[in-house]
Length: 443
Ligand code: SAH
Ligand code: SF4
Ligand code: F3S
Image (cartoon, rainbow, N blue to C red; front, side, top):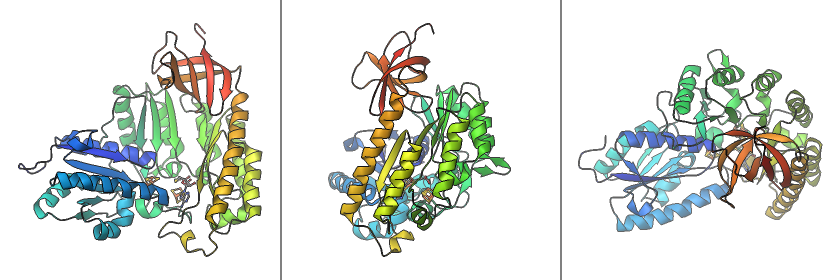
């Protein structure tokens, strides 16, 4: 509880970064609700503003600095306003924030959310900036349940941290070591989510498939979640290619409610670059596993992450990336220009690539991916897909929008079905990333 004379009655919470941050923000909502605070979307009405931050690329950090400038203006009008920086940037930038942004009252790393009420009280007593960015080897928030808004998909965090240390990536430094939650606590949380009306579960972790708790592997966890009544669909993100194996793929193929979709982050198609990235696989192995995924799960949706302009990436390396994309043909791709991050090994490399080359390569890659997406989506025309209706289409109130099992968005005219129904839809057209269809009534 906050001290009894506290003026803090309401809070706002902005979330940046990956789905782990979205899930963490739901935990923070649960903690703040338990101490009686009301959440508001209106920053002008908030007595405390928290921002859950991301440090993955420089741009992500820039955005937060500019948000903090806005919050500072509000604080000048409302001196009791508490400003808190949570998450990955807190961990990474605490010294900079303390020195250059003294109006930030609380700096809280991703393993310290339980302490938030205590630290708010301390700040109100001591009137100075309070920092808690200790990383824990154990914290998995096993007993805390997130406060979820009603919806279709519940994010369930199953492991935290990363031990892979890819040479470009800040996550092992901001999130600390890998640790997993028990199967029982995950199953309990999923049951609760189903009771609240959620039908799709997305299991989350920085390195989701290196999940290991006692003797339980990720594949075994998937089976346990798949057995829960009312779980219509299961997805997971973000896996590391090294931990995708045939056992896991066979488990996925064996259960109807585990989606035919794998996010398979390639990063580069050059063995030299993969080695310098410390990705632990070769392009040959990556290609082999991509084929294996589609062999075991025909029609499996395959998405990827690719970085261009990693230090030392030559034209030839980049050509190899395009070549591997052409061989595999992903359904979709998240593409990034390499951004040097503090603490990481790649930041020290002296052969950094020019910004203009990064931009040119990124454009080329995006153009190629668009072709692949359209080509693969066009092949679905005339097929029947099972679509989980998630919302009304943004463009038309007469149309539903939902996702296929393999993670493509489909728009189709409303008939008798409703949100949360899974309905057969005949695909009639493909425009870029979106499929258009016709619901098969009575099918
Ligand atoms: N754990 C996940 C990725 C988390 S970060 C995995 O291993 O796949 C999501 C994506 O951001 C990464 O896959 C990578 O493509 C990109 N990324 C990470 N660090 C980056 C950096 N320094 N510059 C550019 N992109 C980066
Ligand atoms: Fe970062 Fe690599 Fe860990 Fe993914 S596996 S979070 S890219 S260090
Ligand atoms: Fe960003 Fe942290 Fe996620 S750095 S991508 S919010 S793990």
